Length: 160
Length: 193
Ligand SMILES: [Zn+2]
Image (tube, rainbow over all chains, first blue to last red; front, side, top):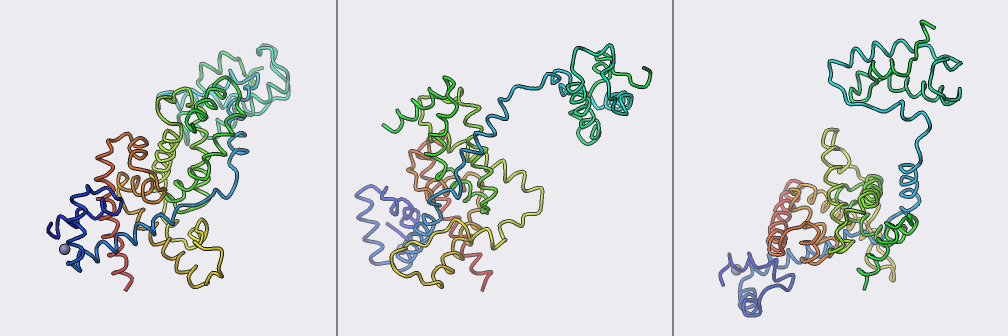
């Protein structure tokens, strides 16, 4: 074995994965070559230092937070959630949707007569959620309401 | 044996017993957290990544192939989650790795029996900081084998399972990664002098 072959085998040797015959040649070379012996020594020290980076334990128990996230994801959606379905729309439609959204300001205290059967608090929840999205129609073009959707649910506080 | 137990737990969770998932979280949280910390060098980010890993595992549990071991699947999710995290972080200033406070946590001096020399502890912390920084400079491929094989102490066969690559490839990547890491460390030491 020459120095090149020995140095290419150092990693396997450190892991005990060098075949027996090569191991003998490897060790013979190491015994007579201080350069390769130094390389072996350095690799060994680095590998043992790497092992010490493993952290024995997590600083906190993760389950409470994981369970909370699971429950939040599985919680049934509120009654009005079918109305606030986020939609993907083409950028050209954004301006139209945002303009249509202006119609729902300000927030009404009563449910409009022809609104689908919802309680006043559910309706307010719906409108609040709606407004939350409306505040960022241009920041987040993926989440906006379409004019069609507004028409369907018949929220026209200005004209009523 | 362990594997049969994990499989049985997975089946119970899939049957609707969500709380059974805590068995798997409690069993693997330390190892997953360790992988995450060695990717990001920041305990808070590592905790987020570990949590996200378990959440992804839970919501994709039906897709888990029971022919493989649950923990190797979990490790794979953790590695991918950490890589995604680092990619997102690249867009903002990369200050975290240089921040001293992050390396204080998650490093335990080896001996607790005899009195620990504070200078030794400081030296070991500094060593951990330098090593993690060097690891962060490796390519995704080499970093994964260094963290899983050399830091976490998983076998080449386990790493092959996790990364879905042949054992021979793991072996050659371990060798390349160590050589590369030594080159980076030599350069870092050279720069420091
Ligand atoms: Zn030599």
